[in-house]
Length: 468
Image 1 (cartoon, rainbow, N blue to C red):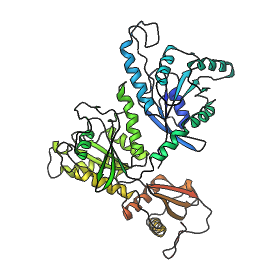
Image 2: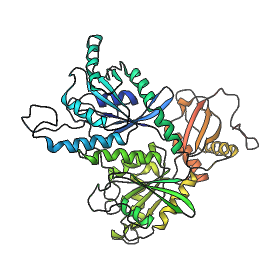
Image 3: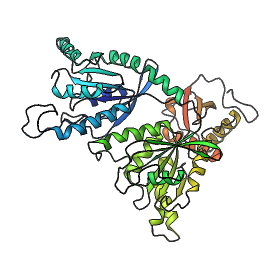
Image 4: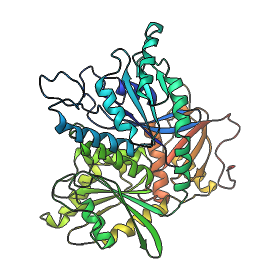
């Protein structure tokens, strides 16, 4: 699967980045408010334009701090020099991890000192930057766009994020700018070896696990949460096969990512999940499953990545004969939407059961490529319907015509039905469970797709086979 290009929305606070983000991804994923700094977390979503999909990241405002009573809004003003380094570091990290940036500015306010400071930061990179002059809500305001050509960044587009005006022109320019990045990503990801992302909340022991797996101190280990800032790739050989291990910064709960480098490290962790095949979700046994663990597991599901749940620091837990079963049940309860994921209990620091990590990850990766014969697919569907017939809506009855697995990595099963709108999500889950009972698909998501087709035949009988 090709890695999608990443586009970062940057700019000073309260210029409309979150509103533009919502417009681009088609959902209200970002909280918008007139109070500057409302965006507390890097939100990401997928946008699609002219046949190309890419990820959009709402970075939140690059905070331009200044002491009380300062008149100059630029962070370069006297007395604010202490904050310049942090501002530049934040912006450079955000730009470094994106394939292109959209600098969002306020057309009603005009060019500010803060805008000019951010422009100086963006000029230090070789990434394409587009300027989106927001809040151009009518023709009378269109003249304000020309002031921003003086920033010297190239393409300038006037838009109204709240009304959608000019957003199509912005997307046309954006697709043209990231074309080379898309080609480069496709070439990079043609490599078909196993790639494993090690993810989890801060201080769960991810870097310690990485060091133990590779047998050396490749990553700095510290008791201070958030030590790892970058996604670090390490190639190893496992039974004569290449494996890439990707250690990532800890992902904090939304609303608890402080301003600074740590806030931007979330983007790197998300990108690591995107380009991996299998994610190891490291859980701190001393804390149990937290709300943030659920949040990270949701990220992994959204990306259709395979998953292994690694319970670390198991040696620090006081145990009796019922502890393992109770802890497993707790995980299954909290992470009920990934019941298919295997659970292993380790001590990264002490090396207990470390050998299981790569063994299980490899097994889970292989499950992504499992293919079922069309006859077997239809047999499972037919038996599932006999055990539990689907309920229709109103007087209409849902009918399955035939089904087949149309791809792997991860498995995708296509169902031809009379009316896809009749398929309730609970019945989708039921069908998925039937396939898992027959083939396991350990640790791997299964995608189910339903397509309308004229009713010409029912599900093939046991003696026949549906077309592929």
